[in-house]
Length: 254
Ligand SMILES: Nc1ncnc2c1ncn2[C@@H]1O[C@H](COP(=O)(O)OP(=O)(O)OP(=O)(O)O)[C@@H](O)[C@H]1O
Image (cartoon, rainbow, N blue to C red; front, side):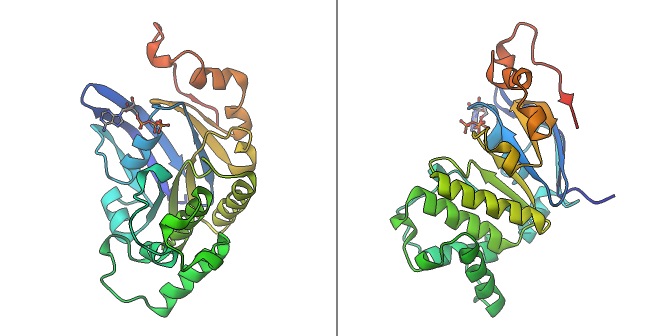
């Protein structure tokens, strides 16, 4: 059996008295795109932070390509594209240098870029259509262009697992279509992609599978299965946490 790119096993995360993730389990195979859908506060960012090893679960375990989150970060085996809000746009750094950081991970610029690094950066810029902006400062780009640059950085990293936190927020239709094509191409070349998105209509085109999250994993299945009205009502209707009957049971439909 192929080792999953990502294996989340019964993970619970708490911030003091708030349970942000409650016994979440999810496995993602190489070559698959999984959509992560949930309301504000449903735990999507916490799930990403947990996968990145930035938040420690109170119970449960996360493996990336069979190893720990710490090992994955050391090896650059997981690439993270944050929501734009998380980035300081005043930082004076050019587009090409931002993408180059994908080649060095946590080492920063300790070693000099090699020809293979430069080639990977140029290929990644080309893939997202940002070659013409390579010498611009990142702060001088539009929101959609910045998204493309951060996706290019993740591509340059050549990580087997990519985490994309709302890549379509605030981008125009053309950019969304272009990014969808890039994500599908990444999956076709063997990458696993977990992508948080509020765009439900684009889900079938983007994803092989999807999950509905409301602190618990409510539904995991094909995009069509997840988009069924009764399933969407679970995630977007009355808050399960507020329901007198308590949170609904996990339904594995795959
Ligand atoms: N550092 C923190 N300390 C305390 N509570 C937190 C912290 N971070 C998140 N939470 C809480 O944990 C829950 C999940 O938050 P999280 O940011 O993971 O949700 P989200 O689905 O990413 O939301 P959004 O779509 O708004 O970004 C929320 O109730 C939130 O208030």
